[in-house]
Image (cartoon, rainbow, N blue to C red; front, side):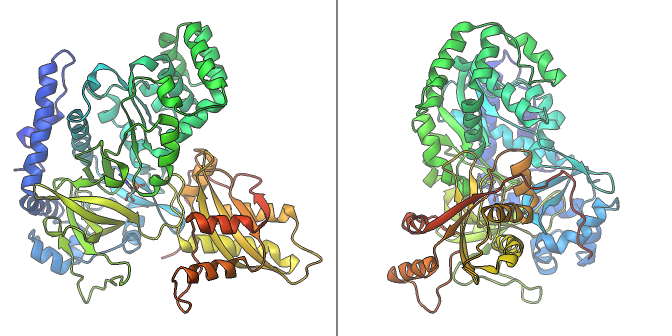
Length: 613
Ligand code: AMP
């Protein structure tokens, strides 16, 4: 099977499905399922071929030559010569590309843009080199999702999807390459904008709304369209659970304006984007009856099951609720009356990995099958109690995709067509079973992430830096932070970070003022990474940071509690993030004062200059 040059099945999958030809759609679905069977049955040989293709494609790159690969394309030579790396190892080379070096450093194809990952390095989004050719491979994975879903949910071609999709700000690197998040890149691509009609994938949102960079106008229009077409909606979703809940919150805040538009058939003057106004002029017709219905549903106090009340034909929610998003499951259940939640896909800026072959499974049972044609995958055995240190002198025992074992956990390492070689993604996965010869993985967690509300990922050192910077404001009050922990509070929408502080005041008669403690919240936010600050400023996906000052002795009580539950007194460490209910209750019962960030932190799409290498 030639994977770089498309196979007949890949060609058929990429071809448009003519609107009227249902049988062709069925044929495409059947071919998609056949394709999944074919690649998963031949996992190891497909992987071997993928590596061979990648190494042949990139044989003349500076990176592979640097490690003396000499044009070899076999696994053994590759594994013996090419080191396992992290983003920080690649950063100097990535910076050269960002600065304008167009020589083939990682990839023989020209780098068309950078995808900006939600994972950060030195506080800024990681820059992932991307080649235009990769869009076809990613499109292929997308094309498999509905054929899989159709096996479980019938008649999805009889209606539409209310799927909230957004583009985010983009910027240019000093060398002139565009840098933007992966989905922004995809939605702006011809692959998405001019996608062929697919009866199984018709969105209520017009492209004009999806592509509007103003998040308020985009959300408003997408919600308005969803309301107008409410009876046609068969699934409701967003990429991540947090995004769907943000849409519900938006409805809570804006239903009056939306109903006014529906009732009068005119678009709110708040929507100024000319292309949206033009497209909505064709869609909006006065419909006072619909406006009255939505007013009746939204004006009450009770928002339980609001999704099924407004969109009664919804068969499932299309949202990722694995990983950090699991914290939103109870709230989603509340608003949807427990509709199934389909986690369809697992991917990243670096590479799209695979899909969930049983998308209507319970969130706790979701497993993703990595598709062997997407890249070359290796796995570092992972054991929390004895973390492996990788060094070039003692090559780590990396395991191939076909050889992982059920019940074991691994860290994912990828080699991609875009030119990443043996790159550690940072995700920990556990093997739950096999589909044919392809392993299925439960997403366990991302390494080193302490707090996450939306796509932000804050690690322990970032939190510590935030505490250090905020503490500076306490100096004039002779006060220090003696202990702290944190909590991602997702009860309110948007969610926000809560930091518990125990303070030591040397001069009790002059405690830090409320104003100063509020400023401490802002100082912490200013120290957090750019994805966090973007969520606060541009996306409104994260609420103001909160500090809760607790009584002296609270953290000692916390330790006593942990020891009473079996923790070793010698090894006890204050947890820097908590979520266990009894611990939350203990902390909250000792709160002396509560403080919120009084303003949004600073954020612009521009990246901060990288530190000197
Ligand atoms: P990004 O690089 O910003 O595109 O983020 C990619 C990361 O998001 C992955 O490496 C995972 O940590 C996380 N992610 C993506 N898809 C899923 C999923 N289906 N379940 C859990 N986490 C996911």
